[in-house]
Image (cartoon, rainbow, N blue to C red; front, side, top):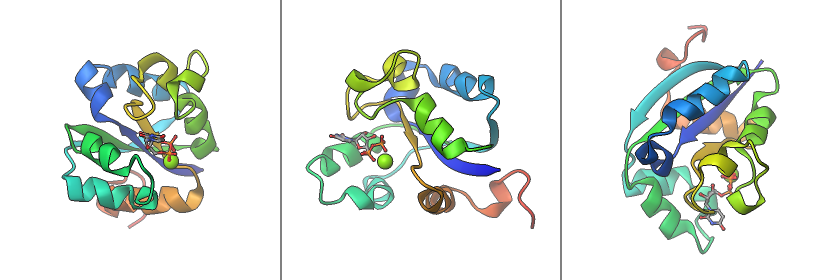
Length: 141
Ligand code: UDP
Ligand code: MG
């Protein structure tokens, strides 16, 4: 069993498609073991996306990610890190396959509806960025 961090980004929340996105995960048999709606400050968005701090899109991305509420979730399932990336589709919706979340709901390469961890290491770090063990259903404590 694997866990991964998923974020419904401000564009998707403001379009009113968070229910549809959550439905995609549930329909695929993925279990949601933690979920909350929050709004990041600019500083928090910068910290979350620190790996991209030298990219030209960093400032705009962190403005966008702190522009409105987001939904952060921990997804659980077999191979869920790769499975979620597949369901999400390519970073740029122009390259995303029909049927993927980004194909259906993204606006552009920045406002692309969802985030998903890309490896077991980043999944662990990103989950603990947002959640304590008390908020993760089924975690031994
Ligand atoms: N992003 C952007 N411009 C780009 C590439 C990425 O604004 O040219 C944004 C986009 O919101 C993306 C996020 O930065 O989801 C993180 O980029 P990454 O390459 O990690 O893509 P992801 O893992 O989200 O598919
Ligand atoms: Mg990434």
